[in-house]
Length: 358
Ligand code: SF4
Image 1 (tube, rainbow, N blue to C red):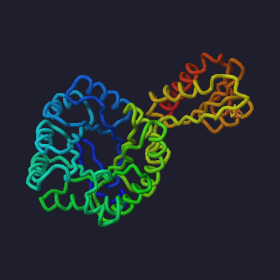
Image 2: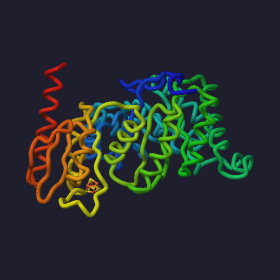
Image 3: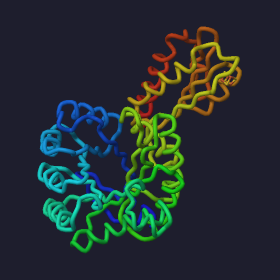
Image 4: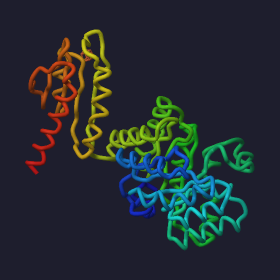
């Protein structure tokens, strides 16, 4: 079942499944009951391109905070609940746009039914989430360990249980920190269900390992046409998750827009602080997400102008200065400490030129 054929599900004012654009999710790392701090983080994430935000709901206060938070943000909010079905009910009553539960840890069937009934009453979707770490004992025994087959069976068992309870407004997530197991589980489940899939590599690690594991795992899964929403899980600031998720989608051609920055790896010919400049350029271009251009940041004039020709704008470093290049033509020489602002000015000019020709 490719993403074009998955069931259409509404989360607040966003729509996923059925070939709709893949949406980016992240999760707050603030205490949800600290409303001001949580809202501040969500607004920053919205600005960075987060489409859907999840918050942890481990207490009654956190569930009640959802009402206040929702008034101050502009993207759908997902409440993440473990163990206590009353918190799921409270989160829904306080305005959560979706809840994420693992029915396996919610307790008796009656309790799951109570949550399902409440979700039905409010018309919000339930994400049925299963992690390899919480796989049931009987499935571990059946498959001889934690396996992709076991994860899929566990998720589908829970989905079928909720369907029997009369609800099919569902999204599924199956996660594993083992990238290849996660890939296999997605390949298997997509043959057996048409519910939209939220895809992520769980506990992927810190910035470097988390980004690499997520890029490989999500890359393989998304490139097969599987996946409706994604999260890059990083042990780091949530804003980094959004940057990485956007880059993964763009690299796969699944999202347009935004400035692509290419930069050389530097070598013995580099005479400017190219690494610093490339990082600053990457940050600077995030304010131009509506543009769809390429910017090259190259270390020297040997390969720089040539490489920059492929880009809409570029810089090629010299000694204490750099060349500013537009569509392969050298515009002018700029002192090193003015390269960033000069590049920004040229991006703005290019944006204006494009607007005038539209
Ligand atoms: S562009 Fe120049 S500085 Fe950068 S890696 Fe190539 S030769 Fe070296």
